Image (cartoon, rainbow, N blue to C red; front, side, top):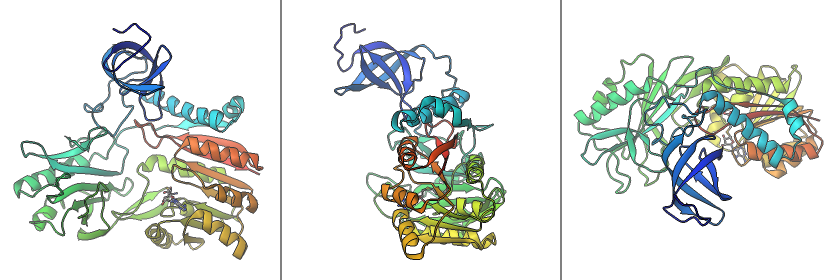
Length: 460
Ligand code: SAH
C-alpha cells in the first residue's frame, strides 16, 4: 500500500468513496487527489489500483471491496458489472432515486445559482418506479460470433464492442429472451453469417425489438449488411407464433459505421408498425421512429407536464422539440390549439399521422429548428402562445430561442429536460428575465442508469 503523498500508476491504495460522478463512477480522494472508480458507490471502502493519472484527477480500478456501503445491494443481473447497459444496479433502488434527486438539486444550486432552501420548498418528490425492472419497450441486440464461431447475441461490454452473450436482460421486456433464442437457433441452423465490424463482412448485424406495453404488439426488425436474408420464410416462421407478433421487418445497413439502423426498412410479415398508447393517446411506431423507451414513466412525465401547464381549454400551446408529437397530442385534448416543432422531417410525418389516427384536429406541426421556426412564426404571423413547452436534447435550449420565448410573454413555460445541468442553466436565464421557477419534479425514466428526467414549471 502506498503511503507517500505522490501517487503513481499501478499503486495500490485504500480509499473511501464519497460521491458518484454523473457517469456513475464512484469518486474517492487520496491526499486531496480525486480518483474515479467504476463499480463503486458512496460509502464503499475499497482497495484500488491506479490505472491512469491526469493533473487534477485520475482513474483507478476496484480490486477489493473491503467494506461495502450500507446502500449497496446484490445486482439482480449476473452480468451487471461487465455490461454497459446499467451503471448503478448495485445501488439500492430507493438510494438511486435519492441520488438522482440530489443530482438535480445540486445542478439547480451550483449551476442555476438558485437558493437551496427555495429549491427544497418547491421541489416535488421524485417519481420512481414501483417495479424498476423489465421496463424498456425497445432493445437493440448486437449479433456476432465468438472466437470458436459460436453465435453470440446480447449486449456490448462497458466501453467496448465485445458482445456478452445473454438473452435475459433485467430491464428489457421479458419476451425478448424468447425472440433472441429463436433468432439464434435460426442463424445457427441455416448457417447465416453474422456481421464482423472490423472487416465489414457478414450479414446479420443487430436485432431490434419493440413491444407495445399497453397493446401487447411486438415488432422484430433484423438489421442486415445486405439486401435480404437467406431462408427468409424459415426466419418468419420461427417468430410468427409468438403471441402478439405484429410486425417483422428487415433494415438494410450496408455502411461501415457503428450507427445501428440504416434508412431502408422492408416489412416481410405483418404490419410496418406496431401501435401503443400513452394514457389514451395512440401512437404508431415503426422501426425508425423515435419513441420514449419507458412507457410507464413517460405517462408520469407527460401527466406532470400537463398538470404544470394547467390548461383550461382556451390556450394556444407550443410544444418545441416535439419528436413524433407525443406531448403535443397529450396536451391537445385540453387546449384550443397546439403547435409542435421538430427538426427531423420523418418525425413530423409521424406526428401528423398520430394526430390523424387519434382524430385530433387542433394540433399543427412544423419541420425546422425551434430557434428558427418560433421567432419566424411570432414575427411574420403574430402567433403567440399562452403556454410554451420545451423538451430539448441534452445540450438544452438555444439562447436565441429563450430570447424569443421571453419576447412572446407566455404565462407559463413548462421545461421537460433529460439533462439537469443544461436545465439549470436555462432556468437561470428564464428566471433572470421574469419567469419564476414554481415547481420542479424529477422522474426516473431509466432505472439503474445515472440518467434523470425533469419537468419544471415557470410562471411570468
Ligand atoms: N418531446 C418528444 C421528443 C424529445 S427528444 C418526446 O417526448 O417524445 C428531443 C427532440 O428534439 C428530438 O426529437 C430531436 O430530433 C429534436 N431536436 C433537436 N434539435 C432541435 C432543434 N434545434 N429544433 C427542433 N427540434 C430539435
